[in-house]
Length: 342
Image (tube, rainbow, N blue to C red; front, side):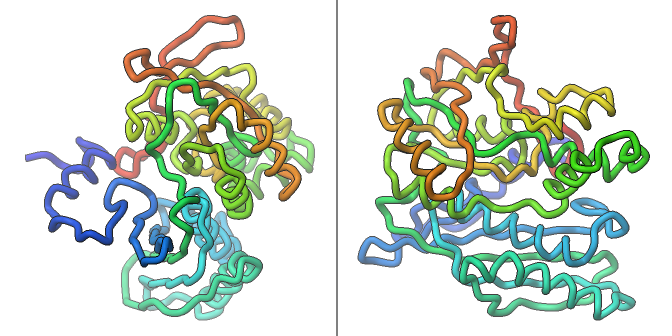
């Protein structure tokens, strides 16, 4: 008899999916993607996503303020809707609470949720509360998108280019400073501030995702939550393609490199497998890339980098190093049941 710690998160999802009833005709995308997609009619699609935050697993209560926790909880869900090119609409939050939880703590959590949701016009409309030994926040978000603008994991084609917004590895740098606070005194204040903000209060690229979907030319999109290598692997799996990524052009912020140097870590490993960056990784028709990049930069002032290309499935998945050598692109990233970077 297999245990979840032995098979890991994604094989578990695949096995459980075989035990649900057949989908009705309104289900366009079900279990296996970050966002479920349902047809509403007249070209409109309903987007559904949920995410759970458990104290001691997803966050350390002593290392994050309740306000920051609220912001991060909202951002994680908003990011999933943004990565589909969608518009987030309605948010629900269920709380599992130890009886001695301070009410003011929860009020601060909700202040953080409001801070992230209000600029996007997202309403917090309900949820549930239960007693639980471990503080747990279970969030559920609904959004919508026009069918012609929906972007998913499947759809990448050989010859497409691979792009990513912003910078990679910043959240992993922040995690390093959370776990090893003694490093902070060795680093420039701005590097510490930027890295901690990237980890504790990430910003979802919702406007960027909407812009990419509306500009046309993108073939797939996913948010970088598990790590670039793992999330790009999801695109390859769903699309039946291979990929080659160029390590030399991966966007890594100077603050991340500074923290990595102090921690004696490899910033490339953080960029590929650190996770929780919540940047957007997408593939696009090479003839449309310049227009896409310009559209995102004009609308949101967010840099976009071309980091690789899509290959035929049989060509495999590769990482081209700075010296030109190519090595297999290992599926590094977070697995909830193995609690490590794979």
